[in-house]
Image 1 (tube, helix red, strand yellow):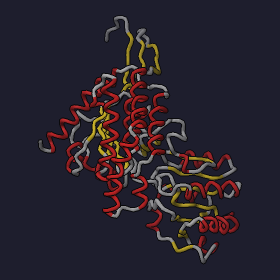
Image 2 (spheres, helix red, strand yellow):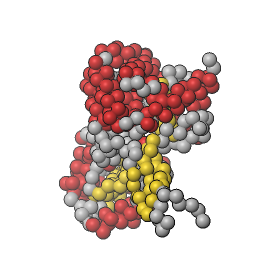
Image 3 (cartoon, helix red, strand yellow):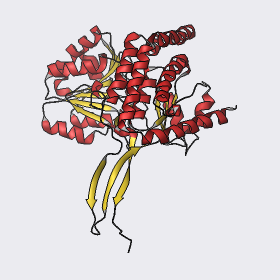
Length: 419
């Protein structure tokens, strides 16, 4: 079978699954999810054994320790995958939700109903847990999912999908509800992206290179964010203790994530007092700091000069830009120029400036007096998330169950005609 036929058959299998899962009652979807969770825990030894094949191959290829850590499955992570499926099963089902009903002058009732999107293709790298998370969210939202993970995790993903599909089979639902692309050739992805009409939405998760490749080649709508160049602005009217904690958490708590701070902006009115201690704390945590001339004056032996192009970089590591700005106007202008529209925060006790920052900073999440690391579906109360979108159409910010559905108009009439 050639690649074109292989990919089309996979999409047809998923399309068949989508019709069945869209019609499934909430109780049945929840039962499938809990059976999937039980299956993952029951088969943990099998999952770890298959994962070890991927980890061993990754080490032989010389992949970084960070990549190997993301790739590794252990008993704790398997339990977390299972718990995530159970959590999704306990969440409210958005499918069938009716809203905005209104009566027209001719007595016709017009409103909207929330419905599944259809077939969603997930294209992702490294983390095997995404396989279970994406499947669980798509099923609860009434969608079929086509999973295409990275080649480095193929054995782990195949093992996880085999368990998920057994639960679907036991529930008398088509196994195509969770369809897996086990061919690791790059051409497979290119063919998938042509299947407008069979696949309804593509969600890529991974590095900027992967996401740009998907976006540039897809004939299907894509939900994505390219990178997270996130900022914290420390205003002159703030609690400096709070600011120190927020800045430190935003950068250091988990620097390899898309919602970690990459540039710290500090109001010049407090920079002389705030920056020396803040820089000292960052340096003690192993953070490499590059900064503007004013930042270098605050700690000349601990800061290297920043270049303008550095402000566009998503480091995903313990490296940070610091810039001193004249105030809110310059902070907002800097963010408008260099931000990736992912997550930006202000630390201030001035309500007027806080609200202006909320209105004028055009990012998927804007925070007042809180860490950028909080831009997450779980933290926002969405339960698990399938990703974060910086697009402005359909979904923006963390994408949970509601973002995996769409709406259609519904009409209740009693014989009305167009006159």
